[in-house]
Amino acid sequence: LSECCVDCHVTRWEEDPFSKGAYSGFQLGTMDWHCAELSRSEWDGHLIFAGEATHQEYEGSVHAALLSGVEAAKKIVSVAFPS
Image (cartoon, rainbow, N blue to C red):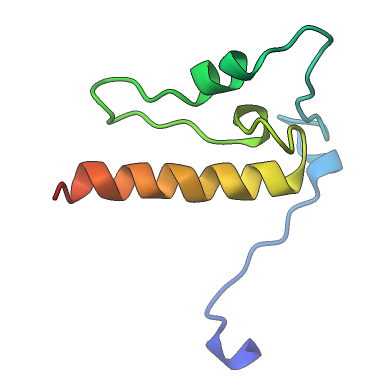
């Protein structure tokens, strides 16, 4: 696997001056439609959102960020290459 790696970038989330290790989390009363609204694309599908706050099942986690990124990538492909 290391032979296939061209480049990498390691981050320290807790040291990032912009996030300072922050992550999202649902507060009491958060509904599924809140996540759906956060992940809804804008500008006719040309502005697409992803991140741990947009995933209903694993909110605030790396799993949620990864899975929402996969969903965002699918949306991008559907906009860029309509069938």
